[in-house]
Image (cartoon, rainbow, N blue to C red; front, side, top):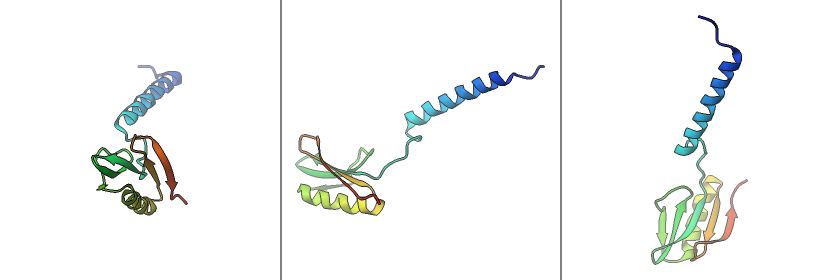
Length: 98
């Protein structure tokens, strides 16, 4: 059997890289998870939810209490607090990065 040419091996290597990148992006493993905390409207009050999570971290009656909880969590991980309006839009962002 003859030796495969370098161009064929390079092409195969490129194809494998693209496939692995696509798999990583679809499963979320390629991107690093963040610790950003979102303060969002929830039922009759407010909730704190980590970015990327479906479940809430904590729920509160007042937005100010939820903001304080989110700040505490974000400070520990040097992340951001993203505060949403009742309509869902972003009202403010507070960064605790170095």
